[in-house]
Amino acid sequence: GAGVSQSPSNKVTEKGKDVELRCDPISGHTALYWYRQRLGQGLEFLIYFQGNSAPDKSGLPSDRFSAERTGESVSTLTIQRTQQEDSAVYLCASSSRAAGTPELFFGEGSRLTVL
Amino acid sequence: SQKIEQNSEALNIQEGKTATLTCNYTNYSPAYLQWYRQDPGRGPVFLLLIRENEKEKRKERLKVTFDTTLKQSLFHITASQPADSATYLCAALLSGSARQLTFGSGTQLTVLP
Image (tube, rainbow over all chains, first blue to last red; front, side):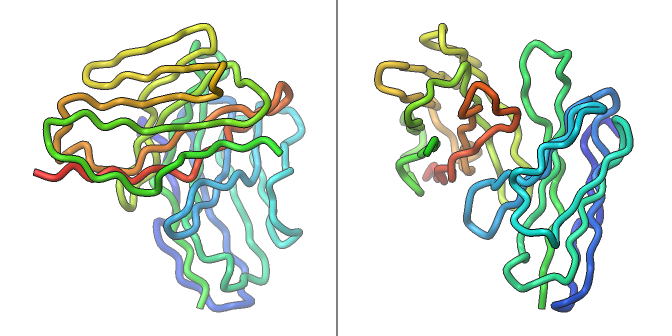
């Protein structure tokens, strides 16, 4: 498709389980971002990938969170041993550094509920 | 620490009026500010970008200003419509080395018919 695609759109899991969230960026976009948005709150930066450079992991809240990206394609955000405070919408965005305006194109998000 | 602040969590206005939303930043002056719209259950959608050397930018009924002296950006929607009801987010790079946008917490706008 033409936009950023995220899956699953909704995930309900039990505390302590691991979850994987997937993001397909817009083709050709070299930059990819993960943000977290808790209910009624703003976007919290998690991690940033740019091409083949080392990712900026400065926003990851704990070592239970990790993310990977192969080249300039799909990214996976993994949360291990989920906790109730991990419940949020996880948003992925991509952008083209080649573009004149570095706007972010967001997916619709993956809503995670930890019971 | 560097922050982006949107000073009202909710704003209600009457249809046809101009909505004005405020975004303030501290200390570091960003090279540009961006504004996004977010509808419930959806991802944010980019609206406008204004650079530090631009005083004003317009797009249809939208107007954004950037005042580096006041460290503030104003976002205006003229002739507002109920369909403009959404949460509006401002965002910027908050340091010269930052590569990720920092977002404000958003202002929820409701346009009443």
